Amino acid sequence: MAALLYQMFSSASLLSFGLYHLISATRNYLKSPPSYTAKPHHPLPLSSSNRFKHFHLYLLILCLLIAFIHQALISTDSDPLLKGRTPVHRFTSLQSAAVLFLFFIVSVALLISESTSLLPLPNDLFFALASALFFLQYSVSSSAASVQTSNLEAKCDGISAQISVAIALLCLILAFQPRMFMADVGLAGAICLQGLWVLQTGLSLYVEAFIPEGCHRLLDVMTGVEGSTKCDLDESTLRAVAILDLMFVVHVTFVVLIVIVTFAVVAKTSGIRKLGSYEALPTSAADSNHIQMKALTGTQA
View 1 (cartoon, one colour):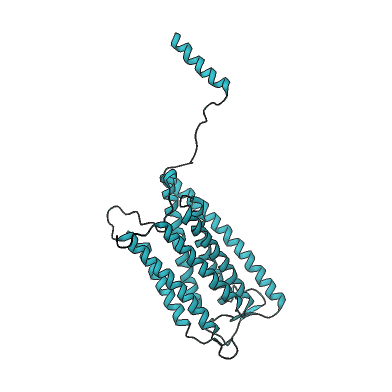
View 2 (cartoon, rainbow, N blue to C red; view 1 turned 120 degrees about the horizontal axis):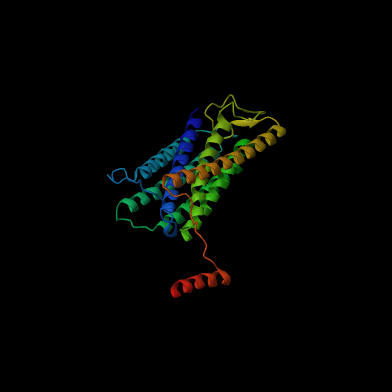
């Protein structure tokens, strides 16, 4: 139950951050498309008071701190599924805790840079740091998938690693091309996708109703450590992996719908129906001569 609650907490944190970034980036783009520039954090649009201007950033720092403490604490638990006393579970948990602590440091630096003049770091540097950290997260998730004793959980970690490397590439693009609105929207969508996949991982591994047929949780492992969900036969394993691939496509489709609906709603509330619409000027020589002749006729009259 504790593992499922942590997965739900992580999913809610990632989804809220991704949706907030998507809405804020879309609003800023619709205000002035030619002068749009991607930002790692968008302050709350509060005109009367600046007390809660960086509330979402405070919430992000708190969530990272809770996640770091959780990973540090579970690293002390023994893994009953591994032979002997090989501390694989401890090392993988410590790696995740270290990455979360790095995210925590960068978030605190971003807060200091946004609220004070003590650390005036540019936005492209924060995007570059975020890219490096997500690449590191990709490495940690890939390593965790390679040492998993459960093929089902290895598949979940592998897909999570692929999403992390996509986020890292989008952050790297924004570090060099901050005016690419599509990359910023893709970044927000990828963060939302990571949040949905974290929830899917928790449901597929720890909730009996969502565990694929032919797989089950080990009855003598109640804490939900790595590898506690097993598949009895190779056929069941292949079927479970195929189901996870299908669910990933479903989550991608859901994220695409979220992006489209968010853009439409923000555009409607901002009073902008369609960008880039204009009436083309006549380009042919005949049309040009026709306009000039009408002007000359009117002058002579």
